[in-house]
Length: 471
Image 1 (cartoon, rainbow, N blue to C red):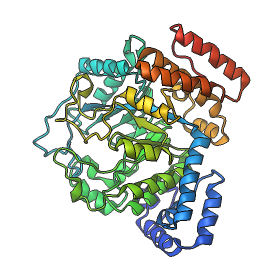
Image 2: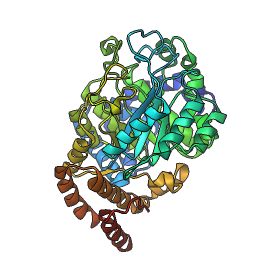
Image 3: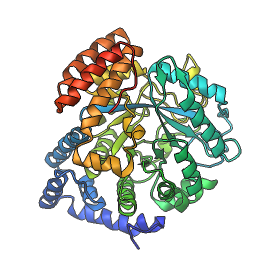
């Protein structure tokens, strides 16, 4: 039986409730009056239920879908402005004991070389990332209690935070590792992580168990309840995601939003981020074998519906997607993207992109500098800001500021100052020229005159060599 506040995964992600939701959406997807009512509610910027969002996803009326897309873009601007947060993944190890059928790290793949970074190799990777200009990393590692125990992850985090290279420093480390215990989440919290990210892969329990035939990840409930344990362990920023293409996308969207509703109901704060990866080619993985793959138009609709259903949540797109797709989705609600990513273990210290230990093929292969310039040419502000995490504005504190709109008093100034740092330390001359022009324009958008004056003073200090200012 469906119970949003239950701590049992099969009750807060209730299969029968999802089926009833999809039937309701099929019944009402042509009900213009109801869809207009749902859109009117969405315009209040308070979010939608999983049933309301499912109706919009099932809707095929071109005019009303256009309203969905325009509203998604406007809501993104209302809460996040024109800022796009930049990050990079850092793969520590591809040792894994699970049997995930869609991932090349699965334990019986004999063609992929296994590799685990030493702490010295991690230092080299981090310095390479710092030399690009990155300030925010997402740590990735396969699940292997022998090769990748939590102690290794904690030591790696300590190493990463310790490295000050030229003007570079990693100021926020997000972590994407396997589901673990409340006590281990406390240890990750104590290590100073930002967001704990764990993709559900699929919310369809039967499909989940077939896709994960053996290994610790086979346990659907333990995996799905991980975010509850993370929050119980003190981690108040968590990131959800499904791998679209593993099961029916409408089922996945309903499950994803039900998970967000559960976190809000139990802990008073929903997910800090939602990621939207799609199944893609990789070593030993043929995406054509997954018959639920979605096309670009469906993908765009999913992103737009998520944005208006959970307006306060950051949305992430990776370099799995092409430049063309990422550009389209930026207009529909995406607020964080990776740049210059390498998805192989030890890839950043290699002159040529190594592919033999990659988790997935990268479609957008541009450098960080090229991605930054591309964003600015579209009038976005690439942001390397990590201030909220470092100032303790996380969990419900962040969400309350976001919902009230007060977060804009911090975010735009911080984005501008961190962009200035990037231009001074890492950007090509062409990117510098574009960036300085956009900063000059955007400083005047800061509504508070006192803050605007402080930012102008600090920009001069950044040019003179000072670093790490934040509101």
